[in-house]
Image (cartoon, rainbow, N blue to C red; front, side):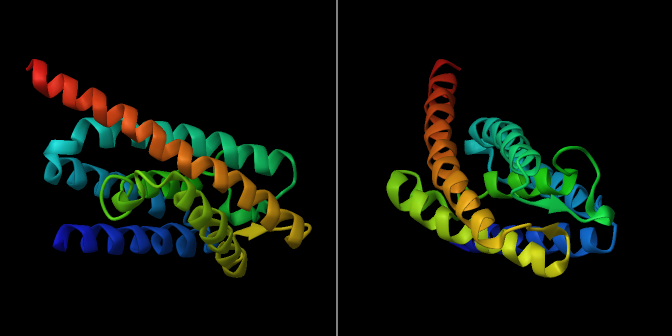
Length: 179
């Protein structure tokens, strides 16, 4: 239980450490935090290490792709000082990595509830992007259209992440049984 709470707190801390420094042009803070958390996480959670590492890689790739599509279709753009990488920025990828580290842990209760995870993501994720907008790292040309597009994107992305995690977790169990 303590690790679950710590996992959630690190996720929230990671969001702030990625977004606020990015607003100041310090885009590396988030990725450095994410890599440190990933290293510690894999050391602590040995029983889910394989699945956690695979979902981090998958989430980083999906996150970069989806956020890049959002940038390329003008759903949102980054402020000049919060851009490192194109079309998506490295600090945004760090946020996807942070999210992936919660999927088996503090958000693990949603693992078998794909519809509920979709609803939570459709509401919560656009609010996080909006908070980034308030910090000045993300700009929306049309906030209503952007929020709807992000809501739809996340309504699909979160169940996909949990479904993929299930596959990785079952493969981890197979690997552990054969060893």
